[in-house]
Image (cartoon, rainbow over all chains, first blue to last red; front, side, top):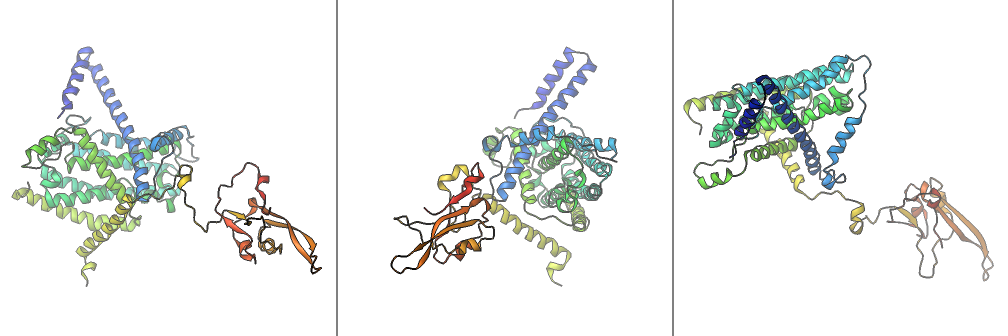
Length: 358
Length: 148
């Protein structure tokens, strides 16, 4: 397996030798930011294309086929259209907050994105409370959505934002509980270490029943976190026109749109990292030849493949179920997911203490 | 109390019904797609027999049609799409005068394809055909003469 940390160290040594220490740090920050942004945008384009194709397939259609071969240029032309559209200043809106809100949403999703381990050593942020940091960074996207609704001076935006706040803050809880279950199993919060441990078996297999329950809870809560159907109450088209981003046009809307898609990718990426082994190849104890063959597939392909599979599952759920009512959403969270998550955490703790995990 | 109504029962019942829904869409994901890619599939295009695309008046091998110029179709038409020009011809044997069709004019541009004219016709002289590519650049070309 390629270890990307050696490449990173080489670049680091080169920069340190070529310029003074302070400047080197600035250059390294800019390099990392550019890499993260480029990866972010390319995955966003991939996700939008995938969404359109998968959605079409679930509805027995073909999806975009006309712009470019297999409709590959469709997303680019949509993005171009979005960029050249006028950004309308809304009367009576709070200018500063109105313009700030989309950036907060995108910022939170980029910070979370840079925590994902794409391969061994290929990750922007990695420190001992990584999982904790992801939870914190992803939850301040709610702030952007609340501000967007508040500053638009529009009742639909306001209702959408309030619903979104109620929903996302609630579901953060069961998401945290299911992640905590896996932290109990792994004994660390550092993302690189969690993945390293899974080269000898993915946690969803090693943690067996409690890990599977935590995985399902995580998928449900993650789906609610990304504001997608069946939990798309914040932007319920039929009742709230477009919810919190009703008044946004052009790239303001584009940021929300991209952030929503990338949040789905990030949710899937975190699920891959903590449940399905991140970049770790499939490991079956006892089959040494098989394990050795699996190691020849690069880690980044393992990671992206597993992530896209979970994204596909999330899309499958999105295009199957109708939207829930707001009371049903909250009942599902507070009466079902949280108690089950707490009991599951207890079961996992007992399993770890008694040594019943693999 | 049934098991499905208890707290634990709801969880299992919900999971079961959600999985049923997921199974349906998964099957749909792998079935052949129904999208028709129109200009490319012209050769294999299947149009339903009963599709109403354009009014035609069938003629036999000698170029005779079955129209008796009664004007029922033109009266049945809600849009005034059909106008019929007739002339009177005296039958030599019986000496009675008889209406004969001169021109059967049909304006495709104002037709709404309701089929009332075809239903009104006592002789089945007119019918709808499947030729659906009716676009032209000048609306005067849409006024068609159906008899020969």
